[in-house]
Image: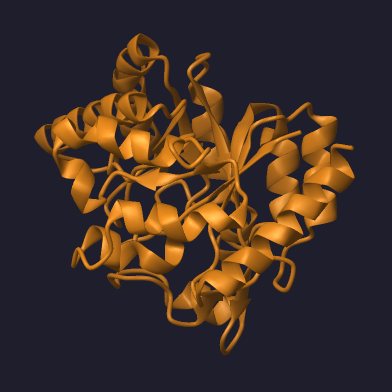
Length: 294
């Protein structure tokens, strides 16, 4: 059966920006959830010092959990070679961070969908950048996972490989045992794609998954897509919510993954309204995992 992790979606500002929550406090909050692991983010303030990585790992493992995944946001689509080189070096450092934390998986992204970038230019730049990181991943025993992502909170443009066809082309270009897919069904809706069709296309490359559910606060998905370009921050029309109460069909998702032989980590990315909501999402996903992997 896949193992279950949780991501501190509700506490990113406290952990990554203003420092009003410590990692130990997050671990103490999350321990009663009964999950197997906690997904961490490379921008957590306490992780800026490599000397603290071992302590961060011990804090989680002392509560009977592990850190299976490290969430990172490299920007590999920039046309400037020096910029991309700096992003590659950042990702290599994050790979080393992942290994020190005990994580077997480290996320990569494609980068921003800059208006001046053609599809072929972007695919070439991104694929070459990811491939430049793979020797470090292999050395550290870490698998790079690319997510069908929407948009980093601090980017001006959405993900270059946001659309299904571009994402699948990029995945197909990189054939390496230390490279796989982190599937997020909610993000497919933002791209105007069917999350189940995307899953069918990449199911044999999926090694981890983000479990979330999203609902529109106002308007339609078409309204959202018309407004998505050129604004820093996250879409205002969209909100994360309790899993099982949004757009995703988890029976179809998990039955497809089960048939494909998936047995990796599922990390819950909801709980923006607090720990009770996160606990409800954990209960829902845990029940579905037991149902589909009896």
